Length: 324
Length: 285
Ligand SMILES: [Zn+2]
Image (cartoon, rainbow over all chains, first blue to last red):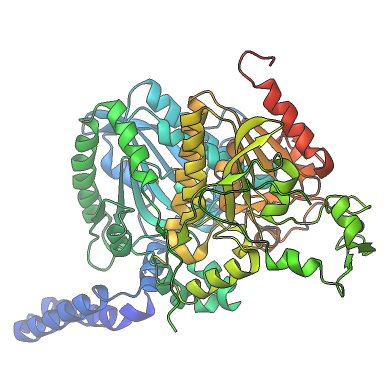
């Protein structure tokens, strides 16, 4: 049984009733077509009502759904073949970031992404998808490798943040994030970034500097998590839903701000409900945007990438007025 | 104290901050050291560049810092920019205004052209007193303009990242993107073969440490400065481990290979002068 959110409980219960009725019909051969149609209709309305009116924090929770497709799920659904490469060549292999080379519809690509685990055992091995510096160094190494061989890069971003640990600090977490951001900005090969779940601050940006930046419908991207923001503002992480409103972290907001280029629609109820449909949808977007950026001469690509980030920021030459 | 501002600034007069003015009130002659608790006579503390006898480096305002580094009368600040409120974040305009009044600054960075031992440089200082020295759009833009001006004029850049509260939460994603923008500005400057000296002062954390401040050709730090990505409290809460002594101090960063040198404040100006000299075209002047 997949995790059900409080706000979808009425829908899930209704869907259960429909399933039960279907079974009843099948078992007893009684005609309930009218009743079924009526229930289906109600379910459809409820679905629209629930999923088209999600609050920002409900979206954040969708992004964190334990069954949400991970980087390795997308890799296995979308690549014809794939070899995972390991290690940063300096310290160790960080399971919280996976990467390697494969082909997407025949084209060799480098794919990189933070990887959360499905169960406790895998989560321990992957440090709950929270990368150490060596994870980012591995990502950077694979990006440089892609540049050398002129391969496009796809990053699947789902990370609440870089790991805030003692050893992570000792090994230069801040430094390596800075290096990733800087080097990625100048890499002479097309880069497609897709925020598939959580886009948490510097840990996400470290693999998020690209030529096209796409975002799933129920993903979030922000300078700070809603929980941390609520803790800073009100010393109460339980007020995260309120902070999520303030931070404007939804795809719709970020599209309006010009931070991302497009939003990838999810199957109704979220990507976790139907990985296959999510995969098909993702494939269509990757095909389109990869083709778009692979056409651009690389000098222009890098110039446009830099110009894009250069233009981001809101300021004035007059002092901000204060509303009385 | 010396005044490093050019007598006729092109665009703006930077007022002395309330904090500095308050320090000179007669009923405020003494300051207690946070580190060793001894009482220090303010006049003497100022003479010692706000370093206690125990070695503790007091936090400086941006203009105090400039005064210690730039040649007298050499500093010409860039045209002022002011924060907008892109998210309509509740209380942000008021917070900006209060910080402006407290510090006399437009935003958390003071940056412009200056000379250090007659060498022209772009010199910038981040001021912790302005919303924790956090990087919003204004800080990102001014730093970027600093590196761009330096590329145009072939100048070295010296930035004191004193007070990287990190992100300017109130500007949300726009704050995060300043990490990319400033890192790219450093990248262009670096690819033009020019020198960037990054000086980490207390505290340099979060988004500031994880962007331009880590990308210096040479990274210096003041003794005792807190330097790191995640705040020590977050690290302690997440790992439920006792933090090792001296965790995330400048000394810790030096030991772990993250910085080039520790430089005490009284030697900072001379050190920067020396480093600038090593990098003059043709070697010797
Ligand atoms: Zn002391």
